[in-house]
Amino acid sequence: MMVDKLIEPDSLKLTQAGFSVGVRLPWYRTVPLSTVELVSLKVDERTIPAGSIRFAINGGEWRLQQLPELVDQQWFVIDTAELRVVDDRLDRGSEHDVEVVLAVYPPYIKGLRRLLRWSRRMKVN
Amino acid sequence: MASPKHDIRLGTTIYSLTNEYHSRRYSFEALVQKVAELGIGPGLEVVGFQSFREFPNISDATAARFRELVAKTGLVPTCLGINADVYRDRRREMTTDESVAYHRVQLEAAAKLGFPVARYQWLAGPEVIRRLAPDAERLGVKLGMEIHAPQHVQHPDVLAYREMYEKVGSPYLGFIPDFGASARAIPEAYFRYFRWRGIGEAAIELAVNMWHEEGDMFARRKRFQETGAERGWDPVWVAELSIVFGLFSRQPPRDWLEIMPQVVHVHGKFYGVGDDGRDAAIPYEEILPVFVEGGYRGYISSEWEGHQVSDDDGFAAIVKHHALERRVLAQAA
Image (cartoon, rainbow over all chains, first blue to last red; front, top):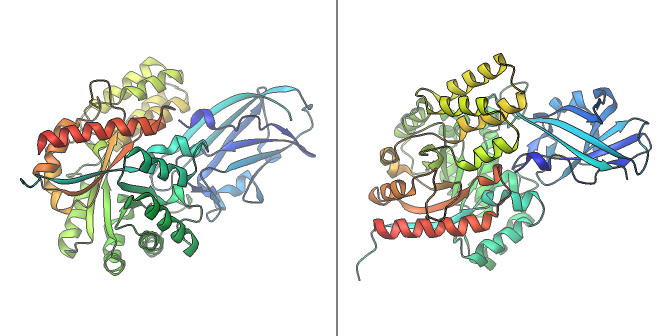
């Protein structure tokens, strides 16, 4: 089952600019990033503005609104992507509820928007 | 010695082991080795976009490694799952020329890896597949369209392919029945999952009732989604419940006879074999004798899809499924 694997365990990390969270592709096969949509990211009920988030994988990082253009960037099914957030409010060692809502548009199923939501309590590393 | 009444061989699709793989407990190579160890081959089916990082391209090195793995395990490559990703750019649908090129690369990958059949999907469209028939012949790889719920042998989308096949008359164009199209019920595992997700009983009941209605399954799914939106249900609930419309349909098993001479491979879709040796959702006791009667010669891949809604052990599920298939086939022979 995929929904409870959406957030990589123990993946909340402090970064220079803020923090990052690891996300897994909730699907059985690789898809292009153009078919992935990060609907929302919340930390302790606080919605992180989309403009503060970058989606990172394959050695690159993109703004969320760029994802639909990334037809040739694959999200290999067993790789972890990183949501990199510009933020200054998390302290190392503190615990937070992280909620991710992510949609996948399987590219061979017309009109399907596979929408998944999961949350996980994690300590900041 | 009496000759056997059928030539149906068993196998496994690695797709059944999605949980084991997605959780990184097993690499692709380790999954294949364990399939061989457990004796749930000899047929080996693989989904290209699941198992090979560079797919749809396949490098010489990857092809060599895969062929070595096959030789070492003694398994028999049966089918490579390829995809009709016509919405890979979701802002626009692929053109026919683009789709032909996209499918051709995958067909070449199948040949390079040593698969005799490539499973394709109906969204490819008959025109794309008609244009690929010469490639299939050149490469020695049959193109098999998966007949998957909610479609069935008499569905207009499938009839369009049957007409095209008739005109082209190539032995390299065929069908791959998926037994989810001949389901008798929605599997219990899905209800357990929906309740575990906290989805309301009224929403579950409406989805089940609509699933049991007559008429086009896509239209029913749309109606369910509209009703859900009207009632203000959580969009995540509506999205989760919508999957039942695309996974199971109720085609009578005997209808498979209509296309039997064109069957090039089979997906033995199942959701779990109980203590009684049956799958409560898929009537194997009715379906397999139809394939014996129709003279199907080839492989059935055990395709356990319970991984979508549970973390149960895929290997154990397949071992039981092979026992079920052997029992029913022995009785039918």
